[in-house]
Length: 136
Length: 61
Image (cartoon, rainbow over all chains, first blue to last red; front, side):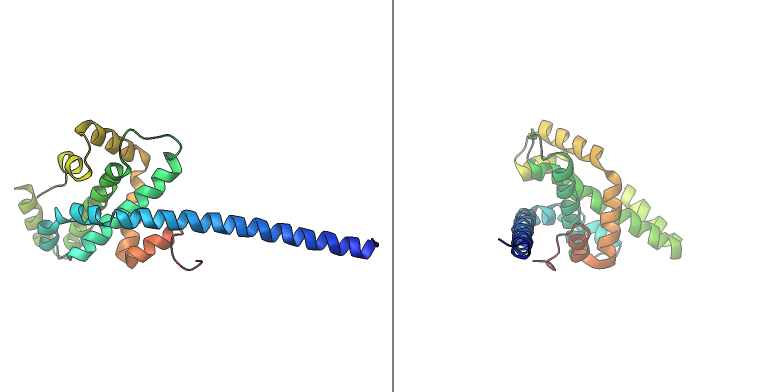
């Protein structure tokens, strides 16, 4: 084997190695992403259920049901990513869906608070009325 | 206001009240500020913005 062919062999081998490695990483990443998305898709009905508790207040604040459902689902996404980052290594004593309900609920609460503040900036009397109704 | 509470979570997920308490306690500990970011992003761009935020968008499939 000449120096040139040896160099070409090494080049080819390195490229093959990198290609194999990249394919493996890409497949792992894609598979994981697919699994995450599938799991989240499965949580959509629960996100809807949580959102349904806030339809009355949503109506008072001019929020559509879809906005509530999206926010609840977005909360579940954030919660699941956080779960994978921090808690996936040890087996939890609860169902992941149970953990996600907190994220869904909290996202809706944050949305409602933001909305009340937004209304208060332009229409303080209206915001006050809504708050008083919420307190009843 | 009808608020989603621990009893609702227990019945919707088939969990015991104790399991809900533990799950919610851990969730609360994890990162409350992430919720703020998630909600702001959802207001700006809907669920697709959240997918992009966590690298779960379909662009590189």
